Length: 344
Image (cartoon, rainbow, N blue to C red):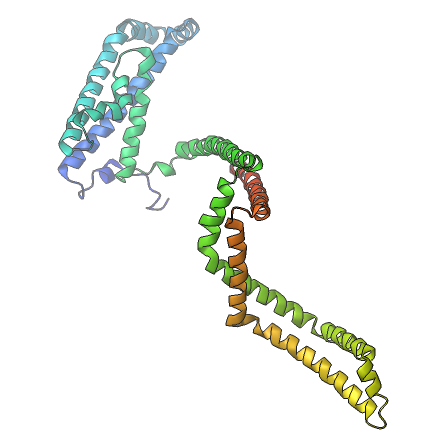
């Protein structure tokens, strides 16, 4: 076991770096934790002892000890519990006084409401006694914040957190799915508020980023497609130009000119083909220019403005459908049971 993983000793908890007042409070907290644990163990054992079969079984195993417990502890359990209650009341009053001195709360009388479990746990009634376990939890959390202990390394804590994560995930998943389903139903029933807010509050403020992303994606897609199919496109252009030249009456008449007609016709055919191919090359290489970015910006701005317009029902419907499908994907993702990973 490394020094980092070593269980803190009492000496570690009361190291010299802490002030005398802090060490006194730590000793008091640890004493209260011990008393609460002893008190709760005594309560549970006395409840079990009150059951006839348990008492009979203990009497069969250790009759003298069982008789002593019945005469000494069980018969005076209320009085013994009042001793613990007196200590717990003193703890509440001391904590209340310290809270007033340190001005922890906005009003001096807020402490009993903030530490309601401590107050109710002092009531010597069976229904409230088990609230004393919350006092232990609160003290342990305080010791955790003071770096006196590290409950995250405890086996009990890790096991409890597994089931805590399961409960929280199940509850939160159902809440999120219900909320998303409600938003979908509202949009399906004709509600335009969310759709318009997405366009006005999400899309419109990011118009410049969308423009840059769209122009970049178009440029990369077109350039990649053109480079991969450049030869096929040039062959297609050549066929189109040849058909156009053959169908042109003027060029057909030019071919009948003696000696130069055929040469001139083929030269024009090649010139037109090279010009078209050159235009395509220039157009593709010009996608990264400022002119193309400005064109895309105008198109995106036009789409956003049309979507924001009151009479753009078609655009609103498209955005609405996209939002509904997006929320459905989110619901599918939320429905995944991530807590299964704890048991794999």
